[in-house]
View 1 (cartoon, rainbow, N blue to C red):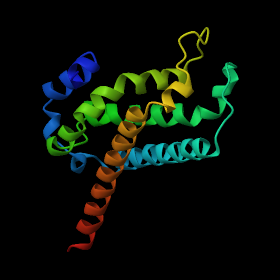
View 2 (view 1 turned 90 degrees about the vertical axis):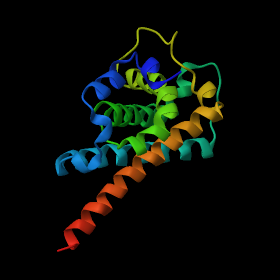
View 3 (view 1 turned 90 degrees about the horizontal axis):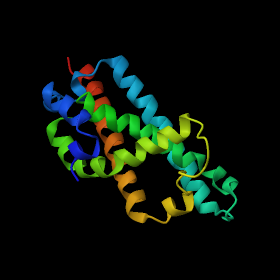
Length: 170
């Protein structure tokens, strides 16, 4: 499944129509870059909490409250969702940076959007609630999310370093 199909075509079609795939973070204002760093930092904190909770272990049973400690996972995914959507819809990455992420974004965005929805909307029931135990046993998904997380962070750090060097260069 490609990014166009995974997002219903909306994000990728919008990006292509506006020719934003050729832009990069260099076009982002300092305020925009600060916002992106803030969200990535929050995602980093949520991922760290999630990793700590996994390392500490948990008592899983059929009680819906057993998923409670894993709010960090949903928080991490919701923040990655916003960053991933921004990367595509607002052309935050150059084509060279976006192309290696396309398959991970295509595979991840629907689940990230579902996690964001779970985080911000109170469902009527837990019937369609993905069980965290199933999510964390899916190593492929977790590794894909970590790749996206690293790529977003590297792009932001590279742009920050580039801007700092530009300031030092008379």
